Image 1 (tube, chains in turn yellow, brown):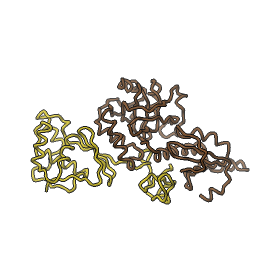
Image 2 (image 1 turned 45 degrees about the horizontal axis):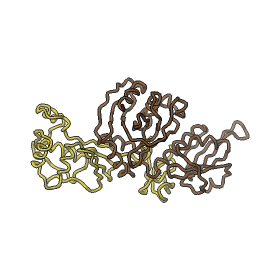
Image 3 (image 1 turned 90 degrees about the horizontal axis):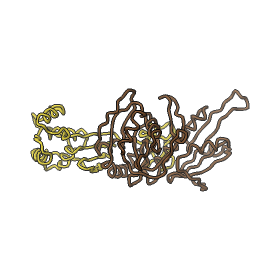
Length: 169
Length: 273
């Protein structure tokens, strides 16, 4: 099975040669550096691992191999950016990021080429300030008070998309 | 709400801020003038009786028997926000809730929890939650000559410019203490009035004894740092990402723990030329 990127429920923004991907289902945001972005963009269900190795060697000008690609795919899979779980062939597992760093250092390749997928859980409104709960349902339009408090100790506040968040402290 | 409506209200007023209409009613006239110090920056009086949110503030005071003290109460709509014997504490809750409601319902603006100052016609944005040390750093930068924009929110427009939100600084003497409100003018500083492009983003957290050893973040990493502190990140995601896409590739973003704010203030200003 060839790797295939998730597209549904994702907002993708390019920032130079990086990508920021927002997962609307899980409310997580991911930053893919150049290497991770290149691989993810090749995950179309038709591009083979060998093709990806060749692409990395061409685009990034360093001696990538299949283990390197599988490490990247592993990172992408953990971030839930691939459609299905992939099973790497025997011999392709077990290479840690540390092993990769050593290998790259030995070849003189820049460590900036290591695939990097940084992720955060995007906070709900109150948590972005001081922390708090929420989750009731809005009976009114955005800006009004909520019909139910959704577990808040204080009145909730409609913030759009039919969701309520705690407004008290 | 009906129970509240049946109470006797001494006075009230209405105002709007960032497109949101608020009303406040009180049972004690003496508190009215104090409330105006807690309103969001840029608020405008309103004569309309239609509001989006109505605050009801009940000043408890003492009963006829001076040994009895009644609770001070604060409501937004029908829901109670605070019930306390300490009126200052209630006013703090009022201020915090009001700012949050503005941040979460303002039209055409993206609110990022951040301290902001201006230097050389560009903004320094310090994203961070409460207790991350934003106010201390903003205060130190203002003392070093930067123009105060906010210690609470970076208010961004669709072009990525930062608008001033110069509420009084919330200065904590100790971590667990209630913050003291202090207008920047009392600290010898001054507030900005014009929207400015971002010139520097500083991702930092106070840690006693820490050395300032910044590393440069990529545009993508800067975006995550801002998104992590955006009030309505889950609902204004497209707007937030569009704004950050315009700004972060052009802006230097630094990340490091820091020690005392005064020790790095001039260093930060030097990055801005």
